[in-house]
Amino acid sequence: MGGIFLFRGIPLKVGEPFCFDAYAIKRMWRVQGKVEAREHVSVPAGEFDAFHLSGVAAAGDQKREVHIWISDDARRLPLAALGIIDLGPVRATLTDVRRPDFRTGPPKNAIEW
Image 1 (cartoon, one colour):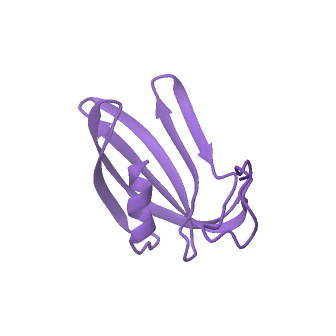
Image 2 (image 1 turned 60 degrees about the vertical axis):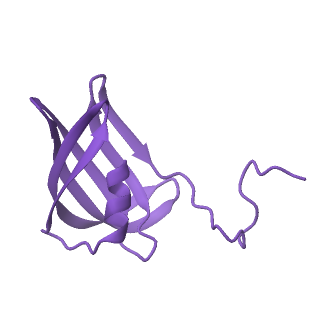
């Protein structure tokens, strides 16, 4: 998921390719793909306009398809990710967003002093 932080800091444009190396599952993976489209995404954390990025991660003779949705706003939130591992498909979705200044109240499960 280190690649998600890369996408949070670079300008995204539909059709633009990307390529980076990532370390996961005890291997270096070359991740190549492109920004597929702008889409409206609904996740437990809310409704967002997002960039859909798709690509393939390759390490030696192994290849894995990956899809990532990043919000199209100043926060560039990682909304969802879908990939394949040895056990099958894996999906992650954003369920909650907490503000670091706590103006919206304390985070869930906050420790009370």
